[in-house]
Image 1 (cartoon, rainbow, N blue to C red):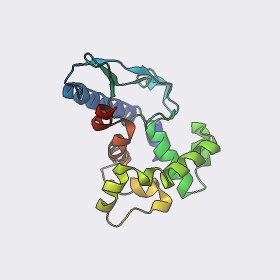
Image 2: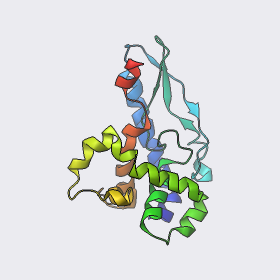
Image 3: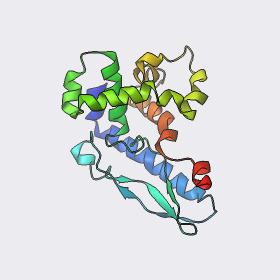
Length: 188
């Protein structure tokens, strides 16, 4: 699954299309102050991206309010918060790292340092399970997700016709972690 999706231009195009749709919804919703949102995308230097898609993945969709000037960033399946690696790389590399020793060729191809993988594993085991997203959703998974094998055990819970559908469903599930919620923005 890992090799195929990381080299599949159709999957990268799918992620970009999902993000464009989410950005359009964010812009249409407007700002919490009821102001109009203008495009204010910001530059990213994504790691783990196919070279032919790097130019499409070098911007994070974001907006600036015409009234209050606050930034509203759309949720994303391409980026997991401020991490430098693409979300799919974080999920797949962490899954492989947690589940087997056969991940060395994949990790070498992605050039993800072992320290970075360990930091991601610590995040999955600690900070992720304390997020409001996980606390609110963990009970919906039956049988329960094995917390010792996150994110691999989470990825296994998503169904779909193929690996692309399962991974995109998992990335959609994680989108609330990728941008501050409107309620948080209104409070600041």
